[in-house]
Length: 428
Image (cartoon, rainbow, N blue to C red; front, side):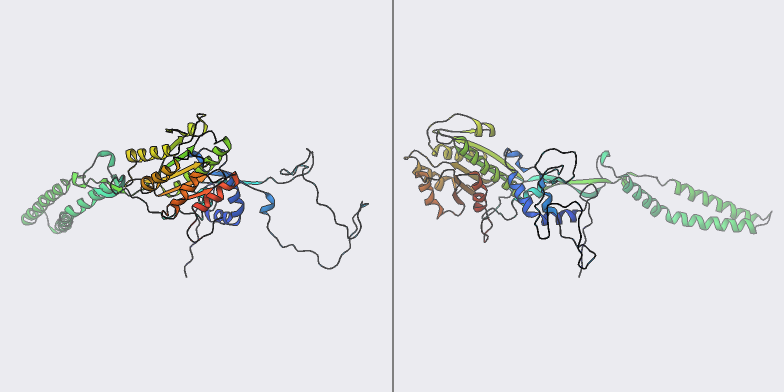
């Protein structure tokens, strides 16, 4: 059996393994802190990390203490209030405790709550650990791929800035050794033979001197041949080779549709914002590229930016179908379903012009649901009006359409988890 110990460091000489154990041990406190983190954030900046505070009482661990043993009776001096068996109340907070309440004091000591930062990845993992996109089938960018540059070995051609000096010099040394090996071996043999002849030939020996002269000429010729081998040849140059390869990615667009008629007060708009924030953050966990389209409507619909979507004061009657028509037009113009994963999120109080609700059901069922991956409708009012009744007819025939109610801030997160819970799991 093989055991792998992860000794990588997570910055500042801290162990990744220790951090993961800490996150598992205090999962409940971290989850509660993460749920509170969505307040006060915009939709696009919700995906950053978060600073988590854990009360010091939750960090205490049981320890073993070794006492003196036996039965002992101790009399503490100065006691004028208690006798054996009395229960002493816990001291009140404050007095320099750091995290308690009470008046300021020049005495006492304590510990503040433990604070640490969650990274973006840890934040999203905790927040969506048991959620999944229902019936997720990603649209791959096979038709419109993104390209990335990857190293692909070495090439004999290239630009000077891609020249690999070490690999080029290694090739040059190998070439010189290979080409000049025979000549150097022959040169060493002739030099050894010349040294022997010079030692044996006596002065006046014409034959020996003639042989020595011939050997010296051959040695000079071989040395010239070895010296003519170039130190660096163009065939030795090696350049880093980089190729562009298609990278399969997926991208999504999220449509946010919100009713801004007179019946949608600021509290209901705030509930809608919380739901949109959760959905956007959840989609960033599954897709590399997310675009947002904001559509607000009363009797007429218009595409706006995020600030106007939540804060513009224009209001009027209610014709929900205008938003659905505009959503379809934008999809046809900019977001081909073959290239984009399309998600729709609609928030309304359910009030609509009674002649328009049937048209909304037809538009959603015939035009939009065939184009989107998932469509979620959240009603931020308890009363079931004509729009809720019409939308209810779509649930049975469309698995990727869901609708829920949320009338208070504490219901938004449970409703969201119910919409996107993993199959086979109960909603939290």
